[in-house]
Amino acid sequence: MNSNTQRIVITAVLTALLIAVGPLAVNIGPIPMTLQTLIIALVASVSSTRVSLTAIGLYLLLGAFGLPVFAGFKGGFVLLAGPTAGYLWSFLLFAPIIGLSFKRWNNVWGLIVTNILASVVNLTIGTIWLIISMKLPVEAGIAAGITPFILSSTLKITVVVIVALAVRQVQAQTALAF
Image 1 (cartoon, helix red, strand yellow):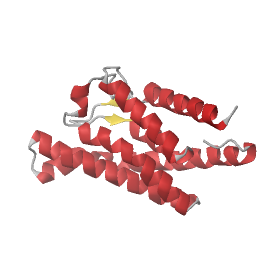
Image 2 (cartoon, rainbow, N blue to C red):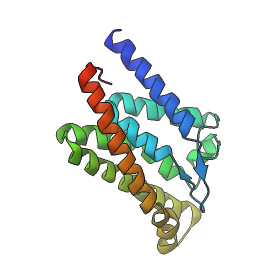
Image 3 (cartoon, helix red, strand yellow):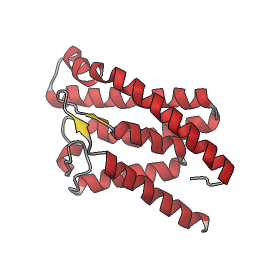
Image 4 (spheres, rainbow, N blue to C red):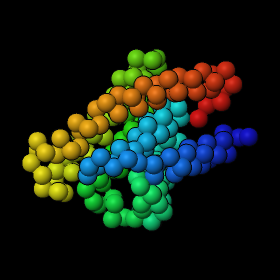
């Protein structure tokens, strides 16, 4: 399989993974707890910036067109402009943050640091948009948009790092880069 075909197939598989897992959510307030960020971070941690950015972009595009791929099996452009829009749009930053930074520090610590950074950026942008869109006081926005997700983000990063290291080891042994 040539590299272009391989890249297209890998992108399709990663997009399908996002679609399959993205809708799973537990409502804990205005922002649902989802597996989206786990899968987004994993996609960015095991594939090139180009592939992961394309997969994440396709996921958001499909959701914008109304496919029920977002948290709670919802879809539609309205979600990309609503209170959780900042979280959704910031998914696009996972790819360059993790991909470009991890290329520079290609080790376990680089993977941990870049995933923490991507998570902080996601929560920050999401919370800022939540505060603006819902006209919340800053303290209420932080209480709703960051505080409930600190533990789950830590657990997700741990899972991402463990799985990504295993996938990268397989990639190295099989010369299968994506």
